[in-house]
Amino acid sequence: MRIAIVSDIHGNMEALKKVVVNIGVSRIDAVISIGDNIGYGPESEEVAQLIRQSDIPSVMGNHELGLVDRTYLANFNPTARDSLLKTGSQLSNDTINYICTLKSFLVTHGMRFVHGFPPDSVVMYQFQADDADIRNALQRFDEKICFTGHSHYLELIDSDGEKITRRPLAEEIVALDRQHRYIINIGSVGQPRDDDKSAKYAIMDTEAYTMEIKFVPYDIMKTVKKILKAGFPAANARRLMKSNIK
Image (cartoon, rainbow, N blue to C red; front, side):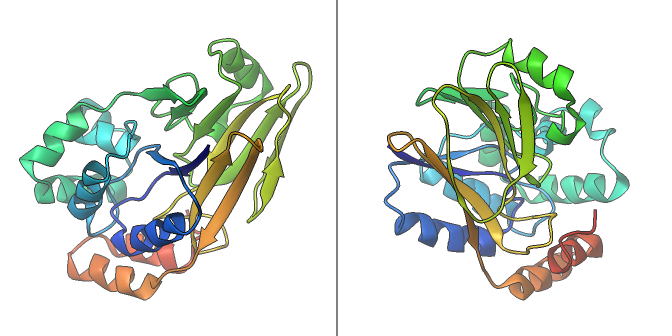
């Protein structure tokens, strides 16, 4: 089975449309979202509708959590908080009700999917985890592979049961070891924060036991203009043009 995994679309419909086209020619059997479908970008409602209409299972991201739990919203930096409040004003009641139903993790096809860090954290960043955190997490879930998002940075964590190794991911196909366990951050479709501005997503081939990272170009300036026209913070647009700025 070939499963496409997307994360952190962040209301960037231009990026998502190109990813959907790429998925369409990649012999995909299923698609899963790891959350943060909304926020930052100008078309969160359209993204959420596409996710729902396409029957794509999704977990809750921290932006969805900030929308439904205003006590957590206080943890956002001012730009992200202003963006999410504006996003919330643009979402339909149906979409907000849908967001309220999202769970913190999903287990399907023998794998775990969580926005932040396993086993079920919506808010913890993978880069915050040291080796002790990773070992503790691996003891708390059974699946051999967990896919994450949230940080917008691609990273592979590999455990052979004793040694833990971690490395950044590029546009590549990784042959996985069936005896190892993995925590894999697949980056971001709509708000990448590495040096490459392309939309990122992953394809897991459960038969070949490979994981492929895809880089998909799209019209960034079209999204930039939409962000500014919609009145979102200009920082959201600048981040797309220079993805390595936090």
